[in-house]
Image (cartoon, rainbow, N blue to C red; front, top):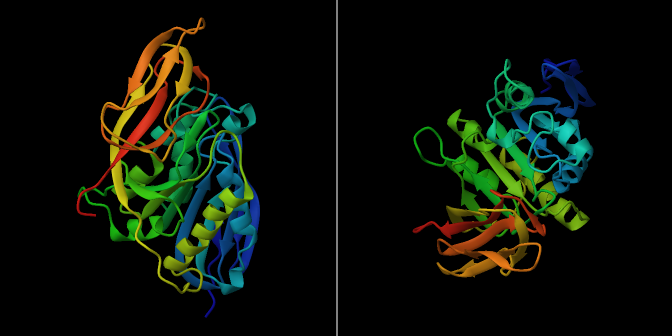
Length: 324
């Protein structure tokens, strides 16, 4: 059976059994950006999977992984549609801007579902929300550590309006070969807002520090193919996948002044409460802040840059969820 209905997004129109790649011009009020979007519309009807990469401009692993995933798709073997934005914050990518959109200094992944009459980042979030995420039956947001950030690979999900993480979101998160699943409650993030809207969603984080490798990209690319199979868009994959250990956000440690950051614990390490994570020094080499773990858990990600500004996140700790 073939679908007789094309899929439209902005100026892109995709007929069944085909793939279209193009750019969508998005007005941000005082300026505009051009988002590279690929739509693969299966020959048979089915669900819609939305995928984003580059929500943060300095996160390169997903930009490579998602385009490779898209280029490998055969729409004639698909039941449904996969819509992917390959660089979701192009101004940040071009400016090599970590964490924030340089057009207004706002973090796109704290701005969803956005506002079409707001500032540049709010408008960008609103476009992505209305055109990709809200139209999807499933959603994956692909990330890695940003330019000055290191992490231990993980996936993340968020609770729905009932405060419970859906089993379908857990199933998506379990498609990736990473160390753990972290339950996140970050307001304004892609997956938090998707979960509140009842859309099964997961985030994946692999790599960082302004680098990428094919091995890292392959983890995300293979995971995306499994996600498409779980969603029923691609043929089912055989084999049993082990359940990821479940963690939750426990504590973020911030610098209380600018300085030079010397971490002493690598990401992925379990630490006890009070463990020294590193030290902040002034320009002369005198210690100005000792950083201790406020909670027991695993150091999931943190700052890898020598330069630390006041208020920078130096370390993030996640703790195991009992009974999972």
